[in-house]
Image 1 (tube, rainbow, N blue to C red):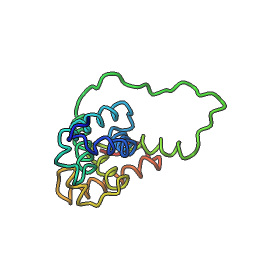
Image 2 (tube, rainbow, N blue to C red):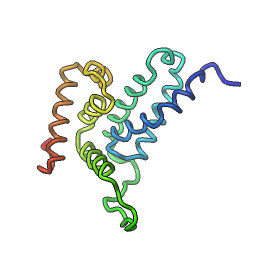
Image 3 (cartoon, helix red, strand yellow):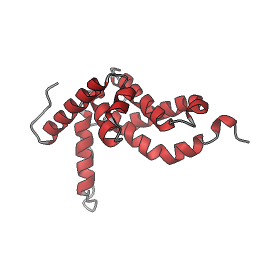
Image 4 (cartoon, one colour):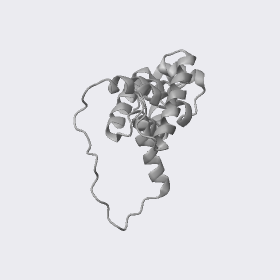
Length: 168
């Protein structure tokens, strides 16, 4: 027998899991494991708030939790194990497509941005949120959200153009 609190929660998580995980990955600089932990933390908070937000905007609620949790997480000095810079050589028969290479390049460039700029760029351009919603999620004035987005995009352009490490 289902609990009343769970009405629609399982369906929401099943339907939105891939998109939310991708958002969390972008917010954590491409670290899939941290992204999974971040999303799990956000979904636990959503579970407790589900009766209040189920009929309104549960995805917006989760996005806000993810952005804030990513910012808190970025301030920590150490998260445990760190992946290595060099991957083992791949077999010759495995050919990566240009799309995957570009996505990886973009995710690496996003990881170089400060967390608030990264969150602003991801929310504005990946999630396609209007500036007002980006400001609400980040908990800042709309002008600050615009500035964070603008600076983040400028640094991304600089990094992707190969000019070097962005000036912070």
